[in-house]
Length: 131
Image 1 (tube, rainbow, N blue to C red):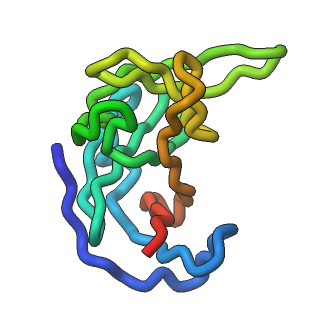
Image 2 (image 1 turned 45 degrees about the vertical axis):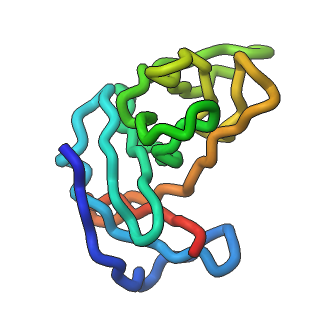
Image 3 (image 1 turned 180 degrees about the vertical axis):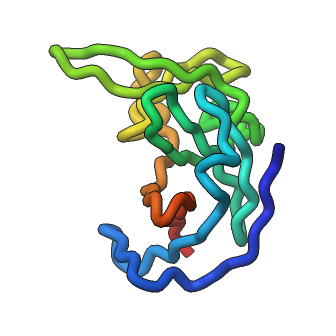
């Protein structure tokens, strides 16, 4: 499923990133657990991931290595470092593994996946994406 939305002003939401517009993208129930979905926002594609524990993460849909719009088809999971467990996604093309909380690539420190803030408001998913 690809979700296409119009840009809407988000009332009552504040981003921790200055001047980051928020976009209501879908209802939480539209996202299947453990699976990614592609979302078209003005000017870019975003990959949304609803993980098994119920959290939702957003990244650029564009693979940092190949430039292909494929990250929503990546394999989600988790990894552990220094006692910290964090969510991950593996690129479906090159199998590079990225942290969904920071965008750090665990398999190639020279690449980085853009991560976007997510808010859940009244059962709807909002994503903050720079203009």
